[in-house]
Length: 272
Image (cartoon, rainbow, N blue to C red; front, top):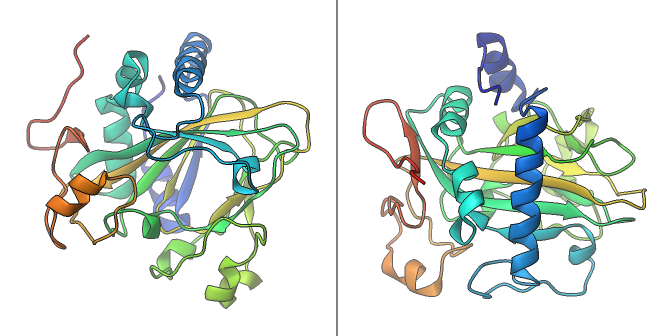
């Protein structure tokens, strides 16, 4: 794994809200990621979450991508991949924070002839608010404008609020909430398989339609800066977990959101 982050990459990320890292995985590592993601997704069936509280439906959204969340919870191989302090340090260095927790991982598999992913922000969906939230997006296939690569509005994280829209059939709905962004140029992020990108949780982004007869596979993980607090939204929490928090409580349960890297205090390390 090429996990070195340069000062230039950190500056690009801070300025633009995203960065693309080529050759993140070598050929053997890429095959391992593909194998584990494939096994974990197949074992889930139509269950988005392991407990079956979210099920895939036959609707427009299901044709945007198949989404399987927190595969680290129920697949040992995915746990080894996700609970990796090298990933945590990369995210912490880019975001400029001391500690990183997993909020949720998710496989995002755009089906053949799949719908585009509407423009949206990530962090407003989640159970915490942070201008330093960050996600990794790992390409398991070559991703291009033909099969649904990511697009970003560079710098939009700097002026974003927590207004957001759902991922629906009108891919430009977000620009009704942020009209100035509709006049900005988007940057496409084509990547070879094994490359990755990181993007800020308040960066406007979307993905094109899959105009090919092949799946476009990606494995992602959303990261929460250590010390983040509950904002009242359930998101991926169980109802019992959400009920156990008051707004402002620290989201520091390692069973739910493991601390995978911290500059100065002990954190979870996978052993197995």
